Structures are given as structure tokens and as C-alpha cells.
Length: 216
Image (cartoon, rainbow, N blue to C red; front, side, top):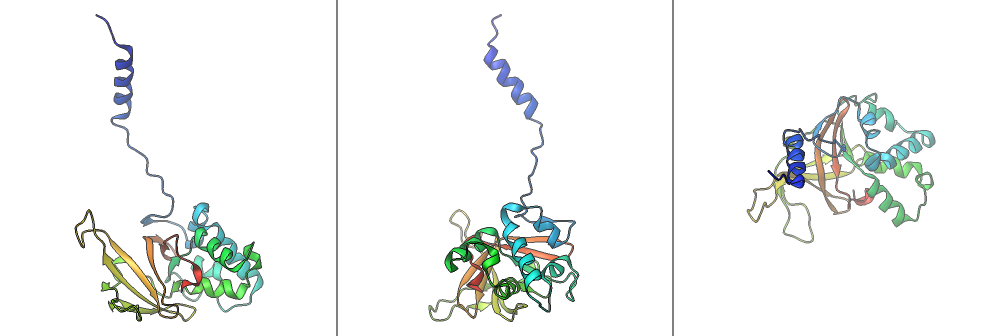
């Protein structure tokens, strides 16, 4: 009997991989429970959080503030483990630097960095299902729609936050639930790219890459 070597090799490959459990690589920008503080979690994903870490260290070393940012993310501040952080990724911080003409994070005034970070922090833990559904405004002169809820950030900014279901394969309201954020001060809007990243010191909802820190 003549054996086709190519067929045998292909069959062996399928036999070896057919029952293999594909590993899930946690990039950090995904739902899940992390048995670390928020500060430690940032260090597990340099692609997304390196610039934020540098910004926090810059603030804590250069600016005498009521809240030490590293302690905030470690759960050691007066807010303990009860914070929600709308995560500002490297892409967002780089865009802000390009807009302002800064070449390094160290060139940004520490007070500005402090305000930018605290504008993304709430003093309570709110998971995805804790936000109230809403609908966007149809009025171009007023971006605040119906439903949702207004929240005050630690910097004093007011954000209107609501959840909604997008379309899925052309079916309205069949997609996953998403968090949408509108700043009352700037009237700018952004979405959460990945929600419910739970750590021992609070929850992170990672903002979309097209967010710029001063959008809040």
C-alpha cells in the first residue's frame, strides 16, 4: 500500500492539537479579577499603562497634594479600596503630549497631571452593571441625554455616565452592554473599551484609545 507522507503528517498535527486547550493571554485590557492592587496591575501591562505609571511618579515626586496618587491606586489613601478608575492608556497620554508640545511626561506641570488623573477617578466602586442605562441626546447643543447618572470625580469634574447596548450583526440592542461617558465641562464624549477589571484596591474601566485626558 502506497502511503501519502503529506497526509500522514497533517493527520498527526491535527491529532496532537485537536484536544489542546488554547491558552488565554491576559493583556490586562479585558474583563477579569486580578489578585493585585490597581498599582501592581498597571505594572503587568507595559503596553497600556507605562506612561500612567511615570505620570503618577512625576506627580508624587513634584507636587505636594492632599492625595498621593500611588497610595490612591494601592488602596492606602483615605478612599481605601473604594475607587473606580477610568483608565488612561499610553495612547491617550501620548496624544495629549503631542497636542501640548511636550516631549516627556516630566515636562508636563505636575499639577496638570494630578488633575488629569483625578478627573478619571470616582470615590466608589461601580461595576458595569452598576451604571444606569440611558440614551444619548438628540440636541447638538446639549450632549446630556436621558437616563444615566451624573458623577463627581475626585478633581471636581462632573461626568454623565450611562450604559447602552449597541447593534450586533444589524440587530438593534443585541450587542454587549457598553459604558458611555460625557463631560459636562468639555461636552466631549468617550466610551469604555474594556470594563470590570477588578483589583484589590478598586475597579478599572479602560477608556478607548481615542480618548485624550483633557476630554474630561
